[in-house]
Image (tube, rainbow, N blue to C red; front, side, top):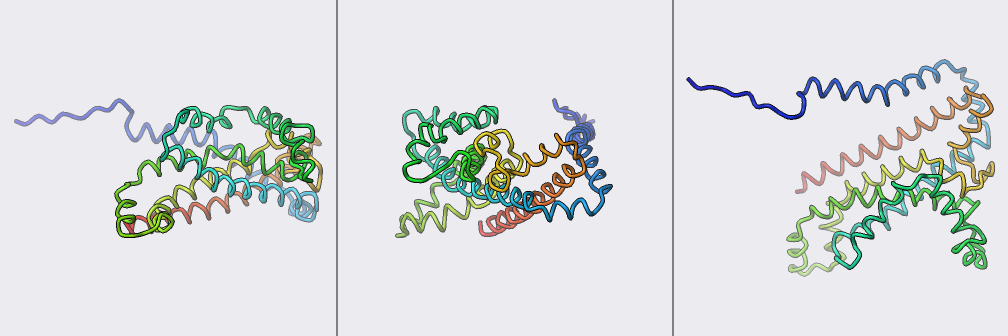
Length: 279
């Protein structure tokens, strides 16, 4: 008679794990979003029309989403260079540089905002060199982009590093041995394999930038119609006890962010599927 032993796992089974997962996500995500949705549906449509007609709100939306895309785009280029250098080129002090990449994660956003303002103000270490050139960073829209670039860099680097490490160097060597230039090898062999990771890092950096508050309020100066972001506008309405306006602003920002991230995720899925079929 053959005895069958049931394999025991240290982790709980699927039913318990799924229950904990649903409970945890419901507590942190689903319930707050449901409350926000119920509050949004209870508002009069005139509240949304007033927000859409307000030039101050439109300027805040334009700056928030424009700066978020600009910061994520800058990180897409320079974050790739940082990740490539850390993975492909051993050099003294590489571990120190690798640890510095995570600095925006460790710093409180208010501290990073104060540090950036100190550096880029007119009397700051970098600001005093830019002022004779007519370039103003602090208390200008450029300062918002700098802050969002700073807090979004780790997302690009940490997403690209595993993808770069998993690349098989034999394909690059084969392309070079067949006479392909380094640029052509990068464009036809390396880059297609990295596109899903690049897009994923871009989406993470963009999502982080859209919800940023602490590091921006110091360096932006919070000037209406010029350097005011949506998060600050929502905080202002809450301080004025305008809960309907704050809710409407939050819901509109959430919907726009969700649509952008949904598009990026669909594009990432399509690129990943195309890469698998090509491989």
